[in-house]
Image (cartoon, rainbow, N blue to C red; front, side, top):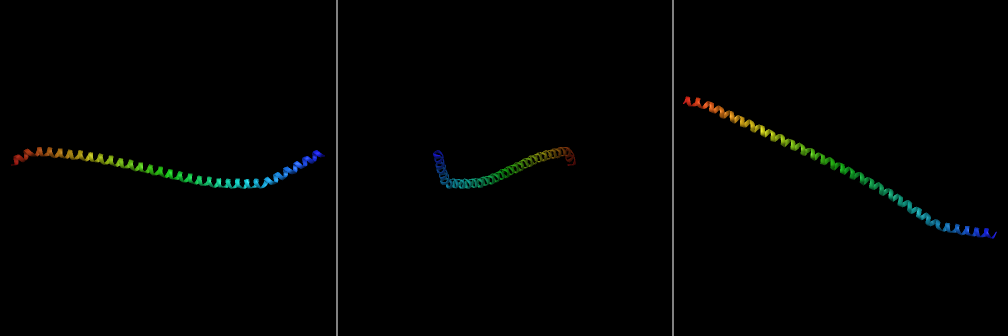
Length: 114
C-alpha cells in the first residue's frame, strides 16, 4: 500500500511536470511549423529564381547561337563576294587580252589603210 502511494505520488509529480512542459512543447511546435512554412516559401522562391535563371541561360544561348549563325552567314557572304570579285577580275583580264589581241590583229590592216 505504501509502495502504491509512492507510485501514485511519483505519477502525480510526473503528470504535473508534463503539464508544466506542455506550453513549452506547444510553443516549440508552433515555431517549428512557422519555420517549416518559411522554408517552404523560401524553397518556392528559390525554385522560381532557378527557373528564371534557366530561362535567362536559354535565352543567352539562343542569342549566342543566333549571333553565330549571323556570323556564319556574314562569312559566307564575304566568301561569295570575294569569289565574285575574282571571277570579275578573270573576265576583265580575258576581255583585256581579247581586246589587245584584236588590236594586234587590226594593227596591220590599219597601217595598210594609211
